[in-house]
Length: 141
Image 1 (tube, rainbow, N blue to C red):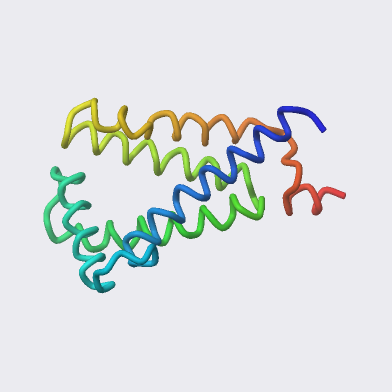
Image 2: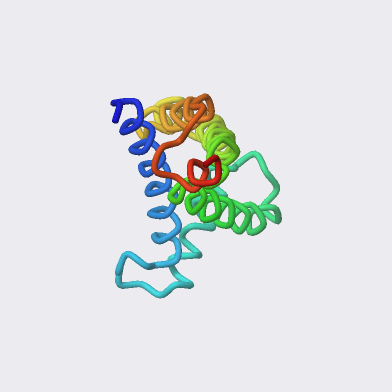
């Protein structure tokens, strides 16, 4: 077992956990005492703020697509299936989020929340040739 194996596993799990936590928050699965519709409305408002450059009628579509992508990418990263593609998708999604945050709030916000760092980590994960402890590794054998 090499340190790179542990590091890439940790990176996969960290990215997946971040996505799943964000989805859980917008679906009120963290136990905050609000209804799911209130949590979703709050997420729609945040999506509109982050994507302030988009027309308002695009916001619900962006919110749903982001939620679907975050959930799908998280599951793929968690189990290690098609990891290179999932990490590439995660890197692109996080980079787009960071750029939208930068446009709408300035550079400090995405830096404070390490969105660029998470994106870079996801892109780095795409360069790993073999992902230990993954479905990908099982399929190679």
